[in-house]
Every structure is written in structure tokens, then in C-alpha cells.
Image (cartoon, rainbow, N blue to C red; front, side, top):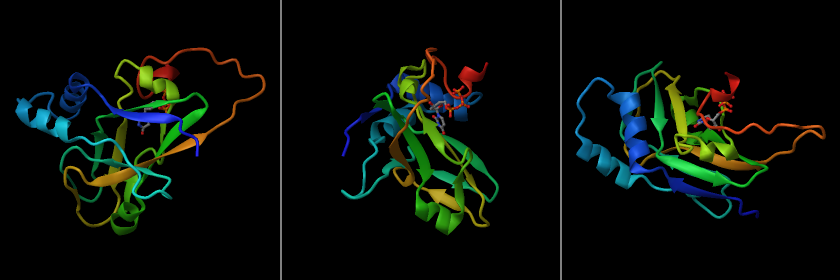
Length: 171
Ligand SMILES: O=c1ccn([C@H]2C[C@H](O)[C@@H](COP(=O)(O)OP(=O)(O)OP(=O)(O)O)O2)c(=O)[nH]1
């Protein structure tokens, strides 16, 4: 098995920035609860030695009514060797039981995203596309990341460098 990546937590500063941007731009938040949330974020792990997926947990409780979505700042970044990509999928049980789906179908985490201004903070946007309330407690696993190797074309000339987050290279 190739050992080609390492998960880390983003800095506390980055987590606060992402969390407040997402959820409390106009409200006063108790920062001690964000600190506690950050401290409980755990590095994705595989459940068994034969599992392909590294399970991502939510740092906070989630409750989605049918049709609702949320963009989850996972607090995680990943240093990945060139030639590999991390693909994020739902945990199968979430889809089977609740029809929880990832909004962009599969999250593609590029190796150079690690060096982006946001420290390569991995976001996972999910929706409840079922017909019952979908709830997760902080620490519950909801998505899984799988490392995949890829090739490039013989005449590939890409040499730009990424600095921004999602959607930044199309500008
Ligand atoms: O679910 C996702 C998908 C992407 N990303 C991050 C990692 C990825 O490296 C970066 C850019 O994603 P992608 O290349 O798929 O998005 P794009 O719309 O093509 O934008 P870009 O111009 O940034 O490449 O955003 C996430 O955190 N979560």
C-alpha cells in the first residue's frame, strides 16, 4: 500500500475564521465553545485495515430538515504527494438511511490545495435529500475520503500555482 499523505488539523485561527464566516457573521458567538469544538476535532482514520475510506467527523451537531444543506468546515487539511488526489464521498450508511448527499457529488481535494491561503481547509457540503430529519452529533462520522492516483496527458503544460480555495482557478 502506498503511503502518500498526511492529515493534519488546520490552525485554530483558520478554524475560527471558517466557522464564523459560515455560521455567525452577524452574531456574537461564545468563542470558548469554538475552542472546545476545535480541540475535539479528530484526524480522519480508517475503521479497519481493509477499509479504503478515511472517515471524516462533524465538529459540531447538525440537524437538517428535508431539503436543507450545510457546508461543514471539517478543521482538517491534508498533505498529499503529487500524482494523488483525495476524493470525498458520503458514508454509505448516511445515503442508505437518510439520503444524505454531498452537494458536489464527490469532493475533489487537490494536492496543491494544502498550500492555499486557507491552509487547505477541507469543506464538505451535504444535503438532506430524504424525507426525514437528519441529525448528527459532534464527532459523528458522515463522509469518507479515499486517495486515488491519477495520470496526466503526454503534452500537459500546467504550471500555475493554486493560492485560493474552491472556484479560485476559474477566475
Ligand atoms: O468538496 C470539496 C471540494 C473541493 N474542496 C477544495 C479542495 C480543492 O482542491 C479545492 C478546489 O476544488 P475543485 O478543483 O474541485 O473546484 P473547482 O470548482 O474546479 O475550483 P478551482 O478553480 O479552485 O479548481 O477546493 C473542498 O474543500 N471540498
